[in-house]
Length: 222
Ligand SMILES: C[S@@+](CC[C@H](N)C(=O)[O-])C[C@H]1O[C@@H](n2cnc3c(N)ncnc32)[C@H](O)[C@@H]1O
Image (tube, rainbow, N blue to C red; front, side):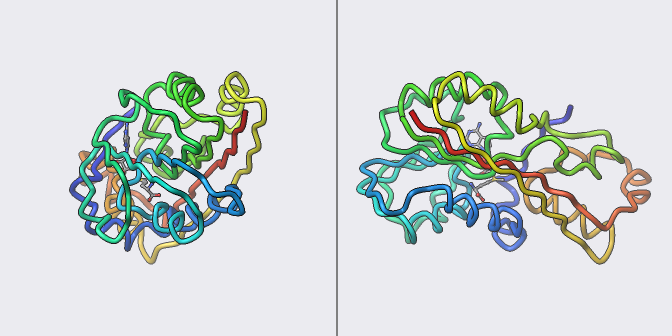
């Protein structure tokens, strides 16, 4: 398994290339009850704010705290947030929140169960999207690299240990590119570059113009 995050270098191109992440963010919002006013919200792995912007436009809340492992605050000039925690979410000390959210970030976590357990002690409502087993299968098949994606069922089983009500949904997006190289460039610009050190011949022999994204959405309540 290769795990190489390259967001920091690519944040400037991220929003343009984050077609899937935008679709995921919009769908994730539909899992949140927007008739409620939330006192405090925490978003983990906020990146450049693809999901944060959707959230701010559609939800009523008093305080919003943001987190990312990189300092991405320059992308949040138009957003009225309270705290920005630059920290690995797995090590972040949490306060109590009315709602904790995360979009397209939990697949990077080393120990999802420990993170969920910590979150469950600090909020009765967790809503997130995560890339799941089968994500970017074309890359795994050709380069033999992948994050350690969990299946929806594996994630569901973890969540049920800490939350009474767990709802989920799965989605698949297949993006088509004019050439295989453009598909690889797209991945590079969205930060996943586990295969960047691959040999030139391996890159050249990549023949797929398709990239398959598998996403799971979860809504958890106690
Ligand atoms: C695919 S991006 C998604 C960003 C944003 N939530 C969106 O919907 O576009 C994943 C983000 O998670 C962040 N990230 C990855 N691992 C992290 C960790 N352990 N703690 C905090 N942030 C993390 C990355 O820096 C990146 O900004």
